[in-house]
Length: 267
Ligand SMILES: Nc1ncnc2c1ncn2[C@@H]1O[C@H](COP(=O)(O)OP(=O)(O)OP(=O)(O)O)[C@@H](O)[C@H]1O
Image 1 (cartoon, rainbow, N blue to C red):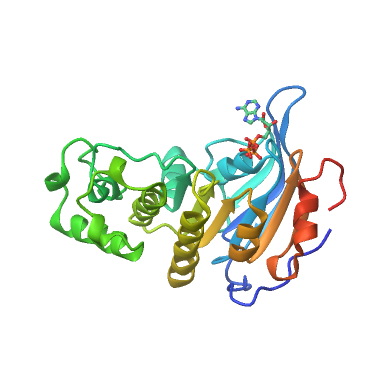
Image 2: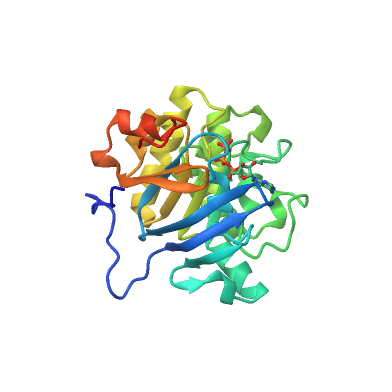
């Protein structure tokens, strides 16, 4: 299998800096016959943009869910910034989850709330709950939420109801909501699967820029090979829970990427 070459832009992992994410021999056995992950070992350095590619059911979402401990491995270890998640108390897990933003295919916004209110609900340690209205958030929090909306190009839509925004705009609000926690890692589970090509490109452009600005580690599952090649620094291909491809996106041909999707193991 190809090894990951140093990318042009991603910071490398130095001796003093553990990888942002490390999976070591991770297996997830859901049932006697269904294995979500099969002996997966990967290290993702701080600041790298990684795309997970693979057929439906290959284990992409399962891998993402293991990184923030939504699921626990049957065997192996998952470490975030050098700390094994299995060693953490519940409070420790909560702290790790606050450091990991998660965005989803269907945005998970509250449609009746404005873009700005939706971003505010992502605020760290928010005690106010999403239904108390914008003015229940502190002025400083509202200002930070507006700053994040500005970063995703939506400051002018702050007071528009989320359910009246386009899909691409809604996903950018979801990104702003994740960013207000100031995470060091962002996981994105098929974030553009329900968007048209132009909106998809816009969302990935925002993720690319913010990843560089914040040195944010991004792990993103995608189905569109062309988008993956434009966005990723590194591609990890999964098939039936196994890593079948792991290489710098710079050196990945379209044919190799397509091969990850074939039923037979040719990648
Ligand atoms: N909670 C669960 N219980 C049982 N099996 C599960 C569970 N979650 C996932 N699986 C199985 O594990 C395998 C990997 O699923 P996963 O959702 O990770 O795939 P995926 O690559 O994200 O697929 P898609 O691209 O369709 O989202 C599949 O066979 C799936 O049916």
